[in-house]
Image (cartoon, rainbow, N blue to C red; front, side, top):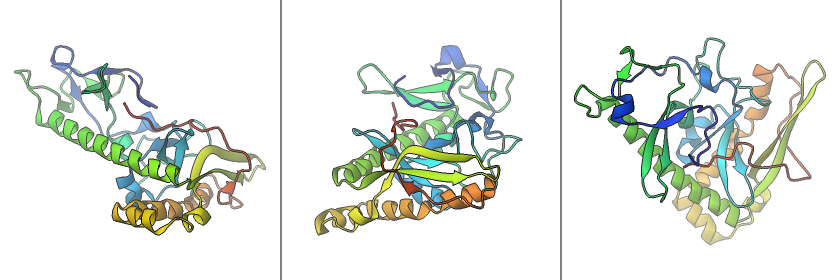
Length: 264
C-alpha cells in the first residue's frame, strides 16, 4: 500500500470471505496513537485543530501536507492518556478517528480499496462491537458509514493538496525549528517542518490573494499562523517547561518528510 501508515501494522483489504464474521469495537482507546508525535491534517480541520495544536507543513521540495504536532520528541504523544483515552476537550484529528480503516488504491490508481488493520485490538470474531457484514454477506450500516467517512476524508485530502500546492507555488513556506529547555536542563528541538512566512504572505499580489480568499485558503493560512502559539502552551502544560519558546527560524533547512502526509 502506497500510503503513510504511521500506526497501521497489518492493513488488509476488507472482503466478505475474510471478514464476514468480523466485528470491530472502536472508539474506546487511542493507545495505538500513543507513540506518534504528529499526524496528517486536512484543511477543513484547521478551525477545530488550531484551538489545540500547532499546525505545521511537512514534506519535501515536491510535495507538502499539513500536520499537527502532538509531542516534543519521537514516539511521544502528549494527548493520549495512560488509560488510552484522548485528552478530554481536545479535537481528535480525522486521521486518528478513521483507524483501523484506511483506503489504498489498485494498481492503476483508479479505484479505492478499503483496508482494515487486523492487528487492531478491537477486531474480534466474538460479536463485540459492530459487524462489517450481515449474515447474508451484505454491508452493514456501520460499514457503509465507514465508507462514506473515508470517501469524504479522501475528498478533503485532495482539496488540501491543492491548497499546499498554492503555498509552494507562491513561495510562502519556510523551514522552521522549535527549540526549548526542560527543567532538567535537557535541550530539545523539533525540526523537519515548515510554516508560512508572514513577510512573504504580505507581499503576494492582489490576484492570488483574492483566489486564496475565495477558496478559504487564506483563512486556513491565518489559522495555521494562529496555532503556532501552542508550541509554548503545549510544552509548558505537558513537559513542564516554563522556559519553552515559540518556534525559531532555522538557518539551515531541516530534513523534511519525517511525517510526510501522503495518501494512497
